Amino acid sequence: MLSPMNQAKDLTKEAPRSPRTRIGKYIILARAIDKGRALLAGTPGDYHFDCPLDNMLFGFKGVKGEEVRQKLAAGASDQEVAAWIDSQGLSKTPEEIKAWADGIENSSPYQNPEKKEWFSGECAKLGLDPAKTSLFDWLEADDKASYA
Image 1 (cartoon, helix red, strand yellow):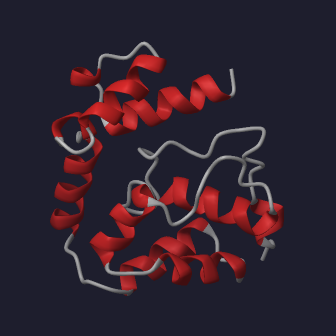
Image 2 (cartoon, rainbow, N blue to C red):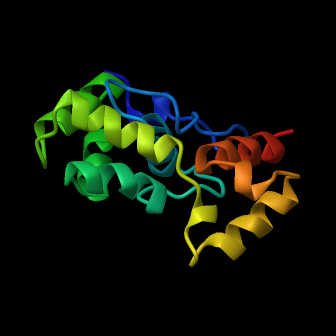
């Protein structure tokens, strides 16, 4: 088994995987894993593990970021982390996971009155129309701009 440091991306030099990238059935997980491994390796850059985005998944499944971090620290592979998440927390059917993932993937902070102004400002920095931009669209554009 590779150590987390050997698997870790250096997020000071490259972005984590897209939140759309699925491991097993889960969106967000690949990105969270990249950020967690980078944190353990000391190369998280400006990224944060166990952040509100990660907690969309962790909360949905009823697991804690610290538990996931411990799996990563033990050297768990992507598939091992996904299998662990499947077996822990709240039991979810494949249909529930798909419905949740589809909803999150298409969601936009622009629709939330408490986040609309912030999201509009962030989109403006990247030349994006906040009314037509999903959270994931913005994250991908922001990652691309950060490493251009």
